[in-house]
Length: 213
Image 1: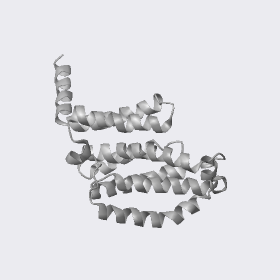
Image 2: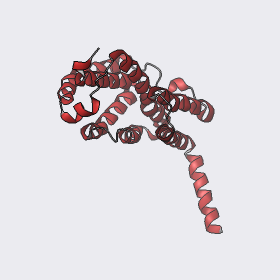
Image 3: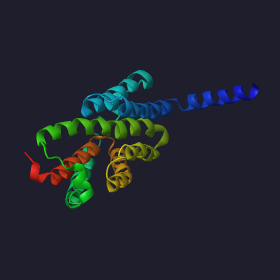
Image 4: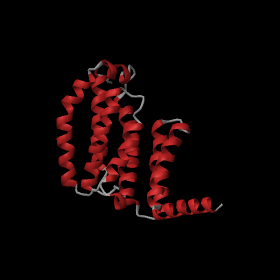
């Protein structure tokens, strides 16, 4: 009995000493799991619920912190504007060339592609995922973990890409770190959202050029 008492006591002390980090990492993992097994009818609506609303409630109720401090502020806008511009400029030809590859053509080909509908669905979905990974996780962990929070958020970001083309999933190791670094340096998750939007929209449009309407 003494052994179990000591070990449970140690677990309690560990959780108490790392309360906020346990809440952030544990809840983010829970939200990702719920989205996988209990999705709503619409992908974007499910993302907004599990990746935005639930984290915001966790910040306000359990962490008792100002939600604006989780990346919603503009931060160093001049710096992140440069990151966004340079990344999109360099990325465009790479994305177009990659969009011609058979694996991506097969996965992203949409014969009923509607740009306006796709844009708004993607806007909502990527806003939600960027807040969870680059807002909730980075800003929820950076006070204690510092730059290591960049690596922490990269792991689940890669995992949610399982099932997509192999090259895309592997590339998210680098893009996850890069997005996290930009957010950490500029103190805002907006640049990651804008870059991610550009990558997604530009790439999907490139694949579906013949079906665009």
